[in-house]
Amino acid sequence: MHADIETPPAAVPTAEAVVEMRGITIRFPGVLALDQVDFSLRPGEVHALMGENGAGKSTLIKALTGVYAIDDGTIRVAGEDRVFGSTADAQSAGISTVYQEVNLCPNLSVGENVMLGHEPRGLRGIDWKATHREAARHLDSLGLHLDTRSLLSSHSIAVQQLVAISRATVLDARVLVLDEPTSSLDRDEVERLFAVVRGLRDQGVAILFVSHFLDQVYEISDRITVLRNGRLVGEHLAVDLPRSALVTQMVGRELVELEAISEIAERTIDRTGAPVLRASGVGKKGVLEPADVDVYDGEVVGIAGLLGSGRTELVRLLYGADRPDTGDVELNGSAARITSPRHAIRHRIAFSSENRRAEGILADLTVAENITIGIQARRGWHRRMRRAERDAVVKEYIEALGVRPADPNANAGNLSGGNQQKVLLARWLATAPELIILDEPTRGIDVGAKADIQRKVAELASQGLSVIFISSELEEVLRLAQRVVVMRDRRQLGVLESSAVDVQGLIDYMADGGEGSVA
Image 1 (spheres, rainbow, N blue to C red):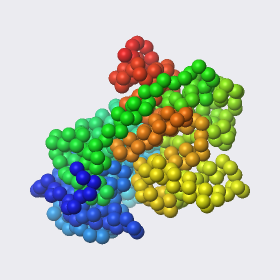
Image 2: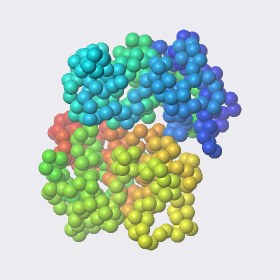
Image 3: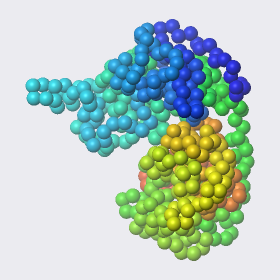
Image 4: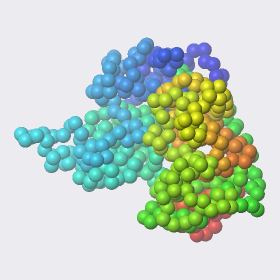
């Protein structure tokens, strides 16, 4: 498959399609976001929309859901031409969306969220008994048996996702768009979500599914449409599209980087001297039982565990974002007190949070400003960076990490998730840290961007940078790390040499609470 596509291929026939999008074109200043894209959805199917970050997936979804107006093309829903001027127009046509970030009201009850804006009313206003009764009925229809009067915030992200889907059934959705619904879920929660999705599919709902987890795409999808650089690459039955062919269509090349990354990571680490960081008995009452971590020069230490295992809590204590109750920390053999992120940065420790939106990217600033703000903060605002110095640093990291578009003046909030993650990585690397903590740096990004970030981390570690790496994808942890700290139930189970364990062995080790063999 060549990177340049002369004409979009013909789509699979769309008889009885509930949604038909033809020749969809959307332009932004200086960018052709979608170029004559065709897409269709049929009742009773799960249709995956695939592509790298920046391929046009989100733009196409926003065209379908009324967020963006189209510059060219047509949208037909149930055989009727539609022009969506708002999300309300799309909802009135029976199109409902559940986003990666749950878009509900955590301070309200489950029942209030399910029925929000559609509450039964009586002579005195909202009939709350009827509201909760109706909410329970919609939840029960999806196999969800929840206390409708409980606060939404008291439930896991997985349950909140299911509540959002239940709300879509209140709107009598004929089309359900699921945008990265599993990015924050563990395996059991994914299974629960998929059971609901299959039930809706069997009821005739057309489901558009977006995910960067290829295993999940093949598990749940009937058809797959691939976009690249804003253009349609192809539409296939899932059973007819081998995984390797899907990846090649997405990235425009065969992805061989993963083998190279493993080769870089397979290094012998010298642990005879003092580690860059040694944390002994670091813990916080009610948050994390005391844990031990050491990281040597040029070593990648992975932290593995299910959601809620204490992975993020541990690294926040190491970085000083939260203060531990117990434990000691040494840096390069000398005792150190890290009671705030400022102390950590002063000791050349960088931390990239898993919460890219709230604690990472500064959406209103440019790419250049996002990359250099860490350097500027470290040296103090009274010592401004010279323009030539700033431009050189920004150019170096845009090229090294493959940030797209390669425009330092682009608004960072307009970048795809994968490119925002590259900008965040660039910000911290530009401060020349001795140790960098990366919490879910590849979550919710495409396979090509993920390989780019993994390759860069492996290369930097081979050059002497020490790394603590957290990922929900155990295969990724084992590929990059020389050792793995295993967590469960907010306590440390043990530390394993990654060369001595495979993914299944790591899963078994977690399930057994650290007992038994890991081979």
